Length: 292
Image 1 (spheres, one colour):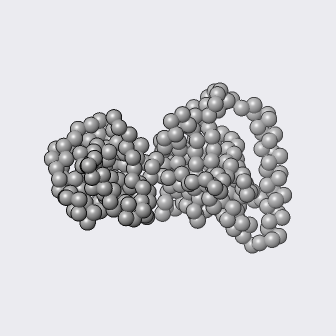
Image 2 (cartoon, helix red, strand yellow):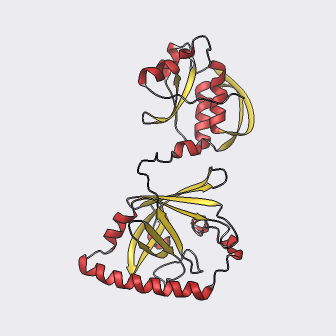
Image 3 (tube, one colour):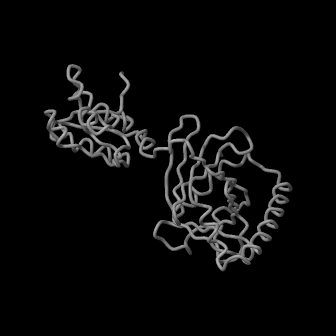
């Protein structure tokens, strides 16, 4: 749980250069809390559970750009996805676009006086062992303010009061970010010595956290078997490149429909190893690997 608090604190140790102007910060917080108190009282007139509306508003994706607070341009884009009472946080390096962290927590919403409180904790765990912060949410904004709660009922996940302003990710007309494709960028070490094809793909999938399925019928029709031996040694290779190496020896320039290919995030499967003929039949798009 301590790791969860360290991760949730958004790299507090790097904030020595931030040194936000305390007078302005505290004044902003005071005005913000007054606004929350007024809205909370109004909400109580409308429903017995004023946090129920908040839970509906929280559903979806939110993003925050941070890192280098107070000393330069942000270096990290954090995206949290809320489904029900579960939040999944993913962090991306802005320069490379690669995902560098992912974790999930459960959460509950409650009140402390006239302010609303967000408490997160390990999936399936006890809220009493979690961390909390004051929040406010509307259609497009989610303010996360740690360090303001007092007493024994809640545990601040960060002691220094700070305002973290998340904004809703609008996916209308935009393809949703594929988590599977982000995981394929994870780097792994490989040492295959006559390892059966099926076991080789299973190893790669386990290392990067992706389910890789082999289309046995399609592979068999093209003359391939799941037991074909694979020999490969590579350090710090991405999961995607590792799969490319596994299929590159089973390409047929003369009969491309008989080539072994992979399909990413289609047809309800994370990764499918099949043939081009099967892709054409099922109208799937095989991944095109770049030539070395």
